[in-house]
Length: 68
Image 1 (cartoon, rainbow, N blue to C red):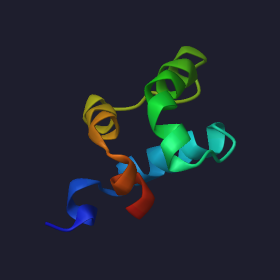
Image 2: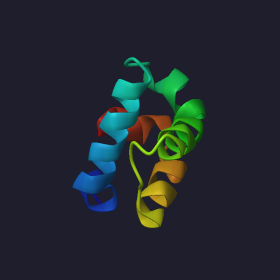
Image 3: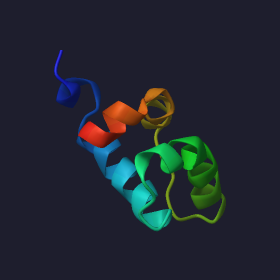
């Protein structure tokens, strides 16, 4: 199954937002901090992500992030 079917546009948009919030970290450095970034952004009222999007971001591998 192609990656685009697993990780839709909403997940990709959220990933780009996290990447920009991290000051454009490389994937290997971004991946461990993604959940902390999500929690921090939600705590500050910047973005409230759907639970399904959070779950998909949580399960993304570094390779999948690179392809997105």
